[in-house]
Length: 106
Image 1 (cartoon, rainbow, N blue to C red):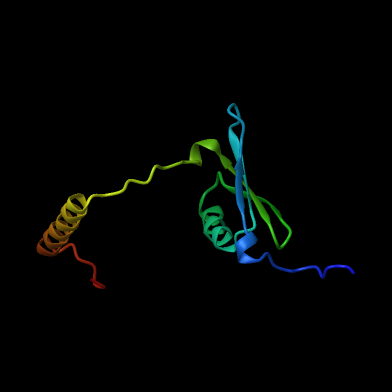
Image 2 (image 1 turned 180 degrees about the vertical axis):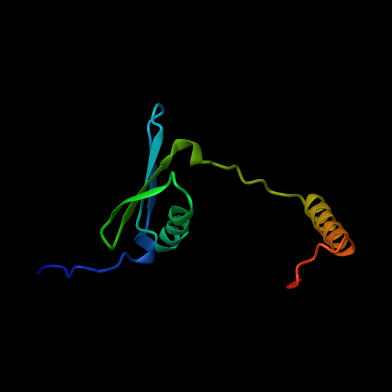
């Protein structure tokens, strides 16, 4: 019995792969993750050095300079560090309000 062909990729099977060699100037991003596609599609519309090079409706391949690829180490904050950041944010917001720099939406 032949399996029916899906016109979507199930969420638990969606993937993103970024490939480039050490000496490459360009990286290729293959993705079936619809959320990531939406994010990158917005960048493609704004950036000249990021391009969509393949789209079959289920997967997309983008190309971008390798210098655009960043790997970050997430930092776990202590409760004291978190409280300090919150206090700094509140102080900055008050300063902006006093200086008349608050947006109409704030």
